[in-house]
Image (cartoon, rainbow, N blue to C red; front, top):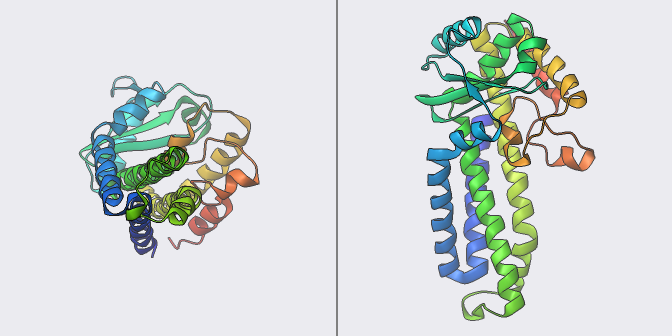
Length: 277
């Protein structure tokens, strides 16, 4: 069900990009939008993992430094049926983790020092299982594509604004009212769809992680601890990468929750606890 929902949302996001391009410059604008999105996706496909790991000063560790963590990831990777990813440590007190990489053969799992200290072995297995599920289902690639398309739509809206200010558009190929609507509505709609895609994939990763770890309680207990800690211990995270973490590293009020990249924690925990073993 969540997979079909994700496909529908991706189609909707792509159609929104096409509409935004057409509203800005007719067929020419639509073509520009598609080319821009393809270029952004190509760049993200090859380099996004390196960028995000460097952004958080993640350090690659070998089996000699963290033998138990390496053994755990190796064992769970075999259960998941994917190659063992590279392992990185982020020196941050907030307990959190994320996976990155364009496919299972080029993937990495990053965990903070805080999560290593806080969770039990079983709870950490639940978290690692969640991240391996992301890798197995190529969620990192899906979320990257969604983010770049949303970014292309926002860029088109920015271009349209300046084109209207300076009168640089040729209205024979477009509707000025459609351009105004696109500038206001398209970026908001793109963000909402991107957030919905991210939330949908989190539910899938939770279920997959529970299966890989062998017990859904491992992950549900971990999420309870991680959620409470994330509200108390800050992490200097970029909003553009918040969707990658197992729990939202950012804190905010109701408006922030509306645009949250993660489903409600209560719902995630309830779904896990309702899984029959």
